[in-house]
Image (tube, rainbow over all chains, first blue to last red; front, side, top):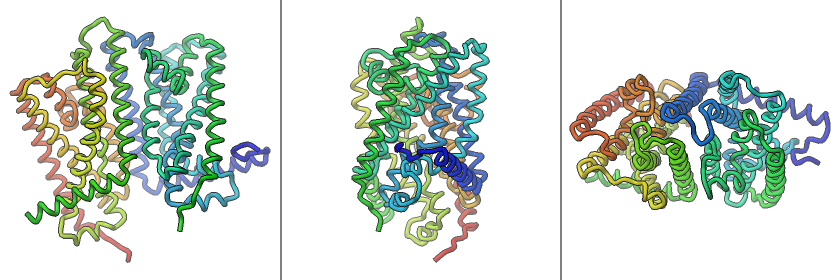
Length: 274
Length: 270
C-alpha cells in the first residue's frame, strides 16, 4: 500500500474528486472576504515585482554574480517562485503550520477517523487559492524569462527542467514533512518551520557562488540547490547525468525517511482534545 | 504613577506571554539571523565578482554593516510588523471587553506592541552578537558619537512610525471584515522600499526619488545611513523633523479612525 493510500484507478478518481471539492471549499472561503482576497494577490504580485527590482538593482552595478548573468539569475528567481507557489498552493502551510496546530488542539483526532488517507488529507486539506491566482502571473514571468533567453534550449533540456522541478517539489515535501512531524513530540514546531522557510528562500540565489563550508552545506548536506538552481541550470548548461541521478536518489532517500518518520510520529501521537 | 504601573503590568504580561513560546521565538529570531548571514555571504560573493571597490556607493564593510544593522532593525521592528491585535479584537468582538477596562484599548495595543518590540530586540541582539563576532573584521563602528545618538533616536522614531502605520490599517477592521491582505501588502512594500533588503541607492534614480518621498525609508534606510555617516548631521536633523511630521500625520489619522470606528462599532453575541 502506498503511504498516501491510493491503490487503484478508482482510488485516484476518488482522490481527484476530493481535491476538486477542497479547491472549491477554499475558493468559497476566501471569496467571503473579497477585498482581502484581491489585496493578498496584489501584495504577492508586488512582492515579486519588488524582488525583480532587487536583482535588477544589483545588476545595474555588476555584470555577473559568479558565473551567472542577469537573465540566468532571473530564470533561477522565476523557477524558485514557481516551486514556492506550487508548494504554497498545496502542502506547505498545511504541514508546516496546520499539522502542529491540530496536534496542539487535538483536532487531529477527528481527521484520523475520516475515510481518507490521513497524510493525504493533512497535506492538502486547505488548498490555497490565493496563491493559485498569484501563481499565474509568475508563470507568465517564467515565459518572459524564456523569451529573454531566446528560447535557446532543446526539448530534452525542457524535459529535464520539468523533471528536476518535480524532483524539487518532492524534496521540499519530504523536508517539510520531516520538520512538521516533530510536532508529535514537541506539540509545536512553528519555530522549526519558520527556520526552514527562511532557509528555503536561500534557494532563490545562485548557491554555487558560496565558498567552503556553505557551498558544501547547500549542495550536499541540505541540498537547497535542488529547489531552483539545478532545474534552471538544466536550461542553460549541460548537467552531468551522475549529478542529476544524485539529485533523484537523495530526494528518494529524503522521501522514504520522511514517510517512516511520519509513521513513527503518528504512533507517538497523544490526543490533546477533551 | 498609577498609569505608569498599568503600563508596567502590560509590558510584564507581554514578556510572560512571549516567554511561554520562547523556543519558537528564539527559533524565529535564529532564522532571521540565518537569512541575514546568507545575504551577507551573497554580497561578499558579489563583491568578489566585481572589480570595483564600491558598489552602489557602498564598500564591502559598509554593505556588511548595513545588512547586519538592517537585519537587527528587521527583528526589532518588522518581525512584529503586522499589528494584528486591534484587527482581531474588532473582528471577534473582544474589543467590547477591552472598552470597559481601565486602560484605553488603543494604548493597550500600543504598549503591547512596545513590549513585543523590546522582547524581540533583546532576543535579536543576543543572537546577532554571534553574527557580529563572525563578521567583526568587516564591521564598521558608528561615524561619530552624534551620529550614533541620532541613530538611536531614529530607531525609536522608526518604531513609532511602524506602529502608527500598521495600527491605522488594523483599525480599518471597523469597516472592512479582514485587513490581513492590506497589512501583508504594506509589509511587503515596507521591506523593500524601507531598505531592509538592499540600500535604496541601488535603485534607479527615478524610483529612489519616489521612495524617498514616502515614509517607509525612515524604518531601515535612514537609521543605517545615519549610523554609517552617509548623511551629514544637518541633513539628519532635517530628516528627523520630516519623520516626526510623518509620525504626527499618521497618529492623527489613527486618532480619527479610532474615534469614528468606536462609534461605528457593533458587537453582538452573549
